[in-house]
Structures are given as C-alpha cells and as structure tokens.
Image 1 (cartoon, rainbow, N blue to C red):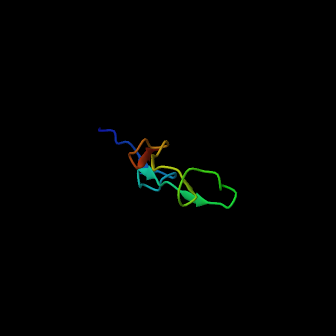
Image 2: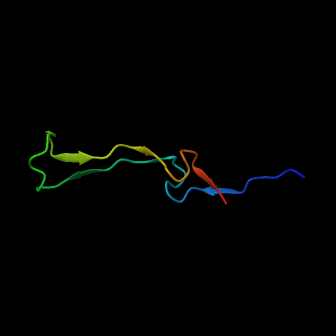
Image 3: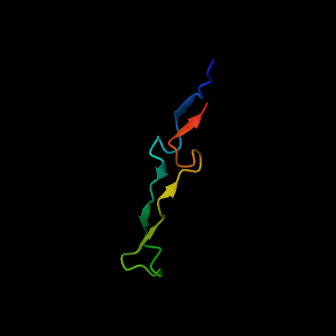
Length: 57
C-alpha cells in the first residue's frame, strides 16, 4: 500500500508561501533616513512551511 503524506494549508501564511512585508508610519520616527517617514519590513518566506504553502499533519 502506498503511503500518502497528509498535508494541510499552512496556518501562518494561509498557503501564500510568503509573509507580506508591512510599512508603518509614526510621528515619533522623525529622525529616520527615509524620505516619507515609513519603516518597512521586507516580504519573507514563511518559516513554518519553508515556502511550500502546506504543512504535514
């Protein structure tokens, strides 16, 4: 009998394979180097599923 791996959609990235970056603006960050005052985090490969979009059950 063949064995199938039971997989489900990754709960962290919802199957998107990446976690979207976020940009934030705050009046307290007046001294940063960006022109528009935004501080952004880059998109990242999901650490839970390692970019596959699914996790093994």
